[in-house]
Image (cartoon, rainbow, N blue to C red):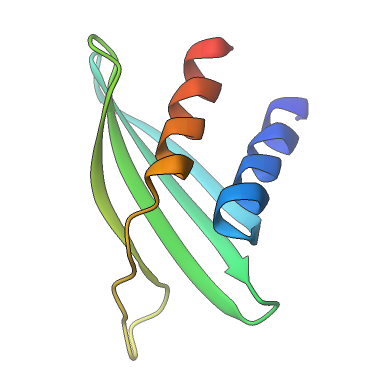
Amino acid sequence: MDKFTSFGKITNKYLHGDLGELILNYEDENHLQVSVSYEYNNFYMLDYEVEINLLNKSIDFISHRSKGSLNRVNLSREKEFEQAVSDYLFAN
């Protein structure tokens, strides 16, 4: 669980929110999809998704948006967060 505590710190530092859910999904042996749900401003639930190529350690942005079916809002990409996620995953 210490690993997830560290990931929560990354979420707080770069997205300014509290980690709610972390899903790591291996699409195949070379691609990892990372889905982060987090609470922003003690009210909004947001999702951030990236895909990481494990061979060349590249990051592909998928989405950053409000969570829920009503009033779905697309948000900007946070490259510093993506780099921190990559650094975290490849360091451990």
